[in-house]
Image 1 (tube, rainbow, N blue to C red):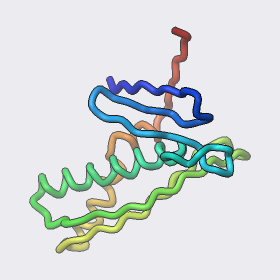
Image 2 (cartoon, rainbow, N blue to C red; image 1 turned 30 degrees about the vertical axis):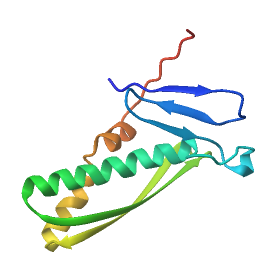
Image 3 (tube, rainbow, N blue to C red; image 1 turned 90 degrees about the vertical axis):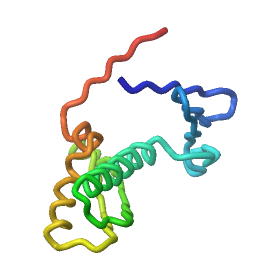
Length: 130
């Protein structure tokens, strides 16, 4: 089970997020009255998909012994209020000496990353007060 702790102190929306070994800052952008000190929550969600996709692709290419030297990804995230759904768009650049068949296989593998699977399936959120 993954676990984070988040803390909001006296600075408007600046949120400190910690795991057992790492930390980062989340904040809202200036136009939402934040200080833009870190990723917005929506950017964090998009970055989870982007980083998971890249890691999954690199692991698969390494396992197969393929020459994937670099991966760039652009992820956009939008909320469609009318349809009540999230829309993520991924654009992946694969760099290396890859055949067209390998590139097509990696495109399919992108959908196998754990965060992609989470986002594509029903989710439950249980909330309680401490």
